[in-house]
Image (tube, rainbow, N blue to C red):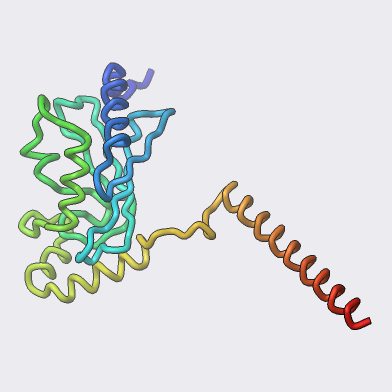
Length: 200
């Protein structure tokens, strides 16, 4: 028999759920938690790109991965949205002290973790870069760094408009558009008929 990988302690589920619910009730500015009722250990949030940064206007999906040893071991932070940032690897791995040497298993909160990650978008730490190219540009040629980061934001992170939603929502929107067009066509025909009758 194959050895099963160690799992997160299920007794942590209500603790995680409570913290996520608290963030939803008292949200962090610019951080939108995605609550998965089927799996509370699926911890994700959309982070708005802060103003006056190359990430402004973008929305970045962030995921926290809890190890089996959590909370004795810190979670891993990951950006699912591609981003050009000194402290984010090309694979999306996030390097921040709160999730490394400063991790405190007795004093932790999901709210604090998301706040720190959001602040990282405002103030990068190029001294501990995971993306060496981004870190070097940030230190030596900030204008070029800003352009590169802004370009990737525009390509991968711009907010999605309602009319390009996928799945069932798109079907509903498409059907509504069709009905509106049919109604407009019918109204035009009725108006044309009224005009024609008036002429008679």
